[in-house]
Image 1 (tube, rainbow, N blue to C red):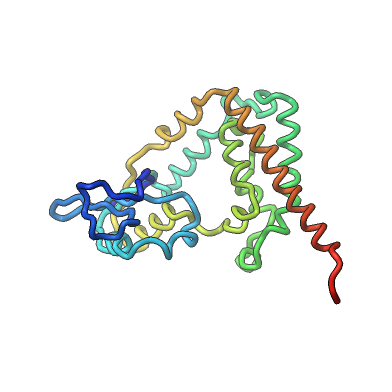
Image 2 (image 1 turned 135 degrees about the vertical axis):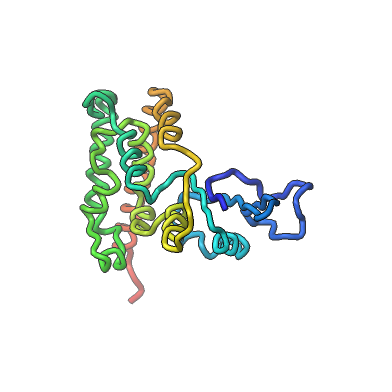
Length: 238
């Protein structure tokens, strides 16, 4: 079984079996023994697990070898992913971003940090997580990161994403399960194959996209606060 992100159409092509589940993301490679290809998504597994067809879960259960996009349970992989996000030669984000964008970004992150305690769930607190830990887990060392990774980070600093922190994404959950069940695991990609394309994106486009993201999320947050204020101030019929 080889679960890694694929773009699959909902409608099956005519050469595929039309009698099966039309929404299944499991593909079978007919050989002896058979191999399976499963398209995953980078979201907390609890959001999609109940929607994953039984045939995909059964294929995972009977597989003896599982190949992932990256070896996410390997500390070396995690360390390499972290290193590739950093600016070279000891530079800081303030050295490469326009001053107004850097200031706007810094204010936005300060606001998010202040909101973290309000976004956390009781379950997260019960598991010993706290706001500063979560913020640092997501945004730690942000001033040393390349702009493209900061852009992705900003997009993940939302209330819904914060509330799901502590729950592994589907790929990681399957990797952890494969390890627990003593299946042989490997990766189909190397870290640099993911990092180099992102790090090679046009700087001005990344800068513009980051500006738009910060403006968008700032508007979403303050609109939410405004409606919350109106709701608390609204007269009741009591």
